[in-house]
Image (cartoon, rainbow, N blue to C red; front, side):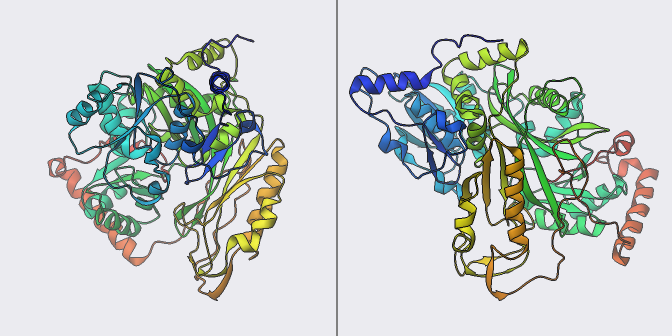
Length: 573
């Protein structure tokens, strides 16, 4: 089904023509890796495994446009941090003037390294008054033509501003369902879609009772209601652990926790870009995790080829995710959705995030499928160019073309340290050279230096970093990923000056459970006999439950019996 690409989407041809007319050299296409590093190369090299990152400031390489070429409109990017810089760079390549809106005056944590105010004509700090911020945007010299979410903190503000300015967005009617994990699952349930069995709890006692009510199908998952990071998501095998997890979460920034059942299956991430309620799948990832001390340690994220064949996992997952996006009111913009797929129960949503895929993943997928398949490219097209290219893609898919095709295969391998200690030599000094000499090496992110304390990897937060491998032959990429993991296990990457190893067993390697994309199962510890304290807590919960059954009005927030019997699994996210 060969089709002619609509006029106006060949951005690079226009860019080079404009540069030639001014007698200057056209800049190469940049890409932001979400970690404060620009990755520069021509558009063709985005699809090459030899494409490598290099530090470069786009504001220095972009030729200044003449007054005739300057646009009379401006694009607003809310919280342009992390992978939101991909969107910023794509918009600059298209010649759009930009205005940054910061939802908070302070840029916290890792987001600060990706904040560059020099590429924006104006920066507005939101003070809590949506109408006031919208008024500031209207009073500028250029009319806002689009409002785009740059990163997770700006999702609600971007929707509100777009609504006030009468621009494309997702509206505010369902903002709570997109921001709060509990209401997200309840919205799916109301729309007849599969959702996690869960209970919202305001106290530790309520969390313990909810776990008991959900049955003894261990483990449970205790998490904060807001999307605030993996550190507030805990897998619990006992009522005792539920109490400890709820205590820790409620003692922080959260005023409520959710108790859910654990979802057993394989984890996938589906990237999409939407335009006026039409959704385009731009990429699929398979995620592998291992368990360590009751927590999930990230192992890898790998690209998955697209398939629309009847009965394929890809088709089942994509159809379900698109229904979820519609149910949650995600009509415009980028999104990435985490799903657990079980062969007997099908897919179940963990969370749908209405912003571009975080970290380095968007740039990696562009290197595997081409720049025009990248979320940043499709998002800029949808929000500023009327979605000409995206609409053409949707039409081609309707005629039988795949949503995307992979020229390369990639693994984003999260580093895992097997013990605690203080580094005597940096990881780059010990293993940097041989890692970079791997045929599929693309980039490495590990900032550990001599004297840094390294702890046993227990989750995504405690991982020392990651390595990206890209190549046309999946077997070669898998083999070289195995070499890196073996070097970690045998002490060839982390050299400690003083051993402070924990007595906790080393996280197990992946099991032999066969899956569609290889051995991608989640790994649970063997069941063990409950402790005396656990038995006492369970007995107490059983007595309390019997009392509540005799007097239902005593606890109006208990889940209905049908919901309690609707046994679903749970997942950490």
